[in-house]
Length: 418
Image (cartoon, rainbow, N blue to C red):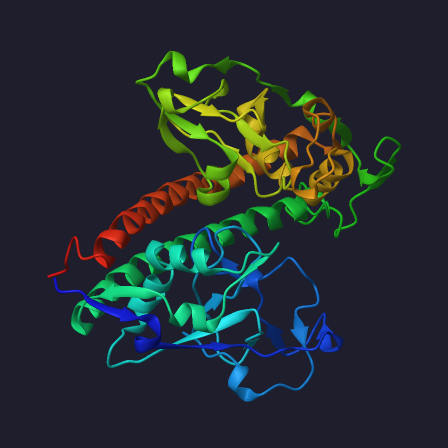
């Protein structure tokens, strides 16, 4: 495959966004201002920014800065290491305003395919050039000119289209899997909230308990009203902490399923690593365990053990060993609940917000309203959701690995598409 050398500025244009006045930032409105928080740089895709609540913009701006579905954007500010060179695709027209920290990529269509350009900008080659040229301040910056100045080698347009189409099809499957997982988690959370927060679990007639006039009584320990026949419980009454460890280096040629926080944050599951590559002792994980991070943030770091052997996890996880598998689903959702997150947040120690951690013993003392019969029914109901989640995460991992292995080979011409 023939590759031709270009400066990016010869095959695309880069425009900077608008300077938006802070006096017009708002908590609601019609238009949302794009920020660096809209880049999921680990997965190289668009994400809704939930880090701020004043993302709407109610002032005037030029219509040129209103984004269209399919527009490609890249950040001009490195607010997290590795962010420069990331790309994202705008999901909806007429909603997002391009701000000055965000650049828009406009392809010269006779030379550059739009799908191919999405992967070209985020390729290692371009990222390395942007990183080397970035201004060395506390928060590094790039510019449209520096992006245009990057050198690339690209195939002819027809080959670009084939490569872009293949990679985008893989990404769409990945995006679909993520959307399915988000919906499954939302369903499980909604059911948990109905039953254990609003107390509208089915009564003996199949009607919502509290909404149908079910009797509520005061619980002194919880300082709140809970259903009659319910009591207060803590996690220690339903599970123990498993502290069994293994030193993987004692089995250097053994392949382990290793849950580490960086890998879990990236993929939602484990990495496969040989013992020789794992540098310290780890907790042993069984199929029945629930892993809960003791390091902030807690809500996105809860997972059940998978099927199979040789599972281990970082000691930054607390390994819950349920006393009964009949309540495993309840414990899984309890660890994702708002009250549990609030409790961990208040009990955490440490100077850095992102590295505050909670003592495992304190975590297990979390009190909550409880009824074993209802918890067992709930666990049975969401069992299929949890299984479906695990299957989707496994498929997502495979698809992502396929894309990541193919991407550099396709971009540098080592393999071609017939």
